[in-house]
Length: 182
Image 1 (cartoon, rainbow, N blue to C red):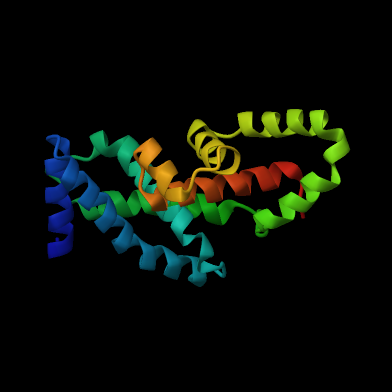
Image 2: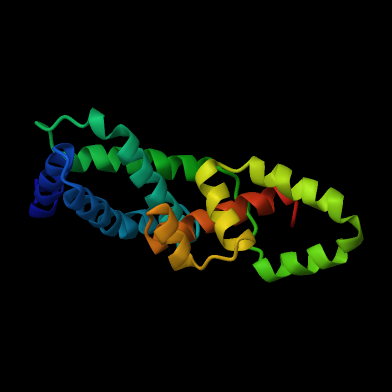
């Protein structure tokens, strides 16, 4: 095992003992380690490297949820790479063009155009927001409805600004796909 994997393993062991700073460091270091690997694999597979951050975030979430499955007597690198590989494969299985990037400014025009049908629109917005995972829903609520900044939302939910941006991006992407925007 190389030095960086040794450091990751030590950080994971410390995190398992309750060291929050070690856990934060572990997640940051894993993300930095995986980004170029995942981006390279996406490009090698004929995909844009733009999905790399989503895959990294999905991998970090899986690491968090499955951290109890890592055997401390075994190297951590293969365990992390296996989780990342599965997240990458999940993404590659999705059809190309599965999402559309739509500027939030475009939604404003749609909302103004439908102003007379506001009660129906409000019900539709509520229904779509309710379909989001709780974390994404709370970020959308805080930023788009309550008017909080990214920093304010991060402080409110005890998240990093990057995590808030990722949740906001994913929520907008989900809302976009359920709206049938092409």
